[in-house]
Image: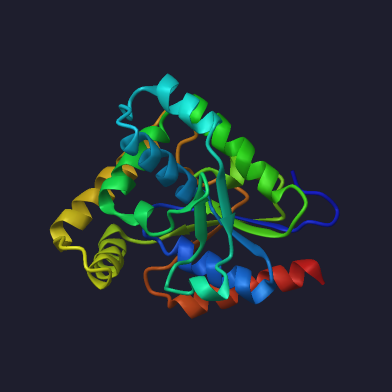
Length: 232
């Protein structure tokens, strides 16, 4: 996928490892486009739920996605409300609507479908084809951008990740307990690492960064410095 002009940073890792915040800040520092591929699967789940389509119905969800338009962009000045990216689905801003725990659980279900992944991976590759991107998700390093110049696996302990996720949800006004969030993260990890289609995994050439004991700024600085050295 990578060409002589575009520089691709591919970041994989489990839920709540800090991929979104880190990727957004790295993209800002480098002047790259930030692409949250997980948002596409969330959007797919949200659309299916709105249309009352069974999330386990691969054919129906795939047909829905074929005719759907999913656009992603760095937030405009008027959209700086805490979001990391702006997600426009069929002309409607769904940036916050797709961020609930229910949609998160649904996204893992639709992501298990091979046809759904095929459709969305193609959309992701088209976005990155001719521009510098920081793209994050679960299968970016080996499936979406296998030729990315820099591959990273961002991880962290499930307890630390649950604590971060719980705080995020409370900040947004969602009434959910820490125990529920931890259980959800463990379930999501199990689903993501054991699904038959494009499971979450660390490729040998990926740079593994454990964020458990690191600040967001430390992680961002590490990645930005590596990219600057590689591009010099």
